[in-house]
Image (cartoon, rainbow, N blue to C red; front, side):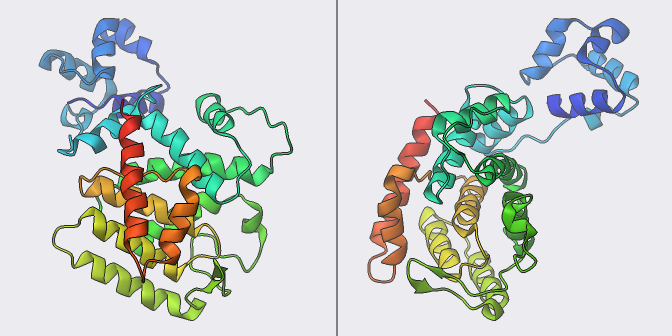
Length: 297
């Protein structure tokens, strides 16, 4: 299948628009629309386009994933399709994940930023709330792009860098953007891993996770708990952890879970009481799967 996003990228590189295909190559606007919908087009048309762009026909194709959910997100992301699953995931996950961490932005304000790149910032909204909202949109895009790759420290650190770049924290010399924490931190009144322990514990966590033959939703939830217990970054651990869970659900063909801000008390209780009763966090995440499923309706 021809890649619409790849086609647009090649046109942009040459300083051309879609209309150039209709006027200079002699193909109809209907054919261009078919490309945008991911429909098959005639081989001779593909050859004309490739010759016009100075590339091979194979360069215009894209790989189709067997993972229907992931492919849907990638297709909708490539054309920034309004009102679809990708659109709703971006708005709902970004709003809820940031809100749980103290953002003052409403869901409507989050939606406005995503849809129009503007905001009605009445009520004294902190600049960092806006920056981290835009950054979270980019982090979800990164997750979708990297979904099928094995989970690594490089990917985890890049998620943190995307989320925290350009924030006030980034101006602090001791705040490691895109790297593990340099100062001890506490979450929920409980101590987390000491900075010097983090690299070893993260490598161990990833090694144990990589050794699992067939990853299940329970494995992803368990990884999420252990990640939050280590709390490897100075700040942003909750959001990074939930983005990792999204990535791994997409990689393994599992319905992702979306934790709503209204359920955060149950979520935090589940994290706090995992060792005594893992069912609390598991039930909250399974409920979050139901929330995600509703995005597709």
